[in-house]
Image 1 (cartoon, helix red, strand yellow):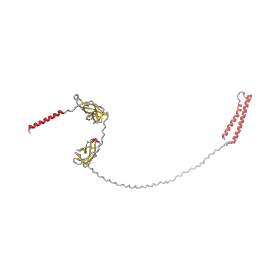
Image 2: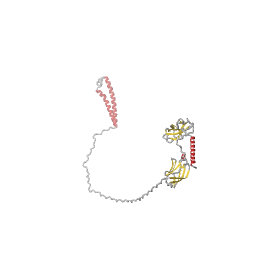
Image 3: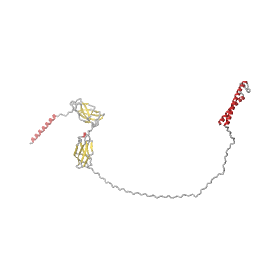
Image 4: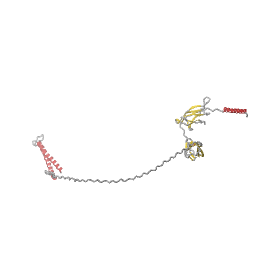
Length: 379
């Protein structure tokens, strides 16, 4: 083929390519901008929402559900809603973590890009009465992995730490590896980790190979290679210091102390004879004390018979005296009426002689009574 023919072929090819590109541009439709971007504050149970919570929007009565955005600083931004044909005036509700529907709802409106700028923007605050419930992990079956380990082309030390990790939270640090052969069992008990890569570490150096976690799976003949594994430096063995043999000190034998015999001290004997003490003998005769002798004659004590006789005599005298006194008084009264009795003054006071004559018997009677009383007291 000559040069002129080659150039003609290239021009034909370019024209064909331009024609095809032009036809594709004419048939393609530009993407629709008839959607609304939502943003605003988010509160959960009256408190600002914590970071990382997912929020979606859906139009009630349709199958439309928007993409999810996450909260940050208590706000949500750039939540794209629409376009949804034939949904104007429908309720637009917001969902938290696919569990909680907000108490605040909006009305969906399809933007009119001919009259309004597109996409539209709307500020709308959302309130959720409660927070989402953490999903309960579904238990899973354990899995077992085994194989061979090569660290920089060599077999690692049996004491090298070997670790298995699944996801950001699950880790197994008790994996065994002996002579390069390893075997480890994982049991995260969380079905949501199914399909997550299983990573292997030696001295915190990640292996080039990974496997996918499948609950209950047994995988063998895994060949794990590690590059840049640090070589452990053996610790120097300390030479034990010679132990000094203890020297036994001789046991001291106690020496008996000499017995000290006390020296007898002579007791001094006195040679002085005791002086005799003379006994004093009194030569004075004791004076006799005279016994008082009564010179008075003893008083005769009347006998009971005598006292009784005297008392009877006194009673007879007293009775005679009382009779005579009664007669005397009767005579005195008669003489006074006749003007006698020793020339007594009629109607005047009695004379002393008359009074003495009257009172004498009474005094004698009184004396006798006193005397008789004393005699009875003596008895």
